[in-house]
Amino acid sequence: MTTKTPLFAAAILLAAGAAVAHQGVTNPTVKARMDAMSTIGKNTKTLGLMVKGAAEFDAKTARQAAEEIAVHAARAPELFEAEVITPKSEALPEIWENYDDFTGIANELKEVAAKAAASIDTPDDLRVALGEIGGACKSCHQTYRK
Image: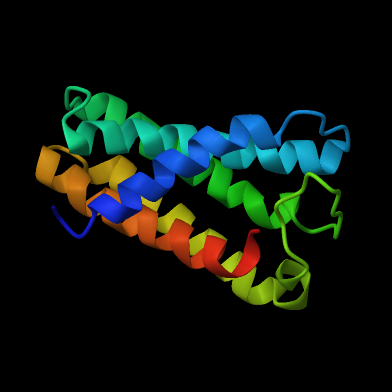
């Protein structure tokens, strides 16, 4: 087992849980956030399946998935600018108490994903990139997500 396996497992669980958590969300601000985070999760899952060997490695697909992650991570500061929390929201109030830190983590994810989108050529490149992407996701989720 590699050190990246726990990050992959966490990404899969987060992506799977998102579909259930989003049922019944009507607030447009919260829905837009959840949709963006779900897209990040879906693309992280795509990368994780390739790393695990459950999907065939394809550099073009991996780069596209990383690019989608970067695009949606770049939107996070805007999507979370308004402090809106609903019962189905997974966002914690700490986001707005530490907004600069939160946006810094979102920007870190954007940067590592953009770097991955430009540099994934081999399965080893993907493994490294997924570790960096997963690390950024984990650092945010530990503090800012229920």
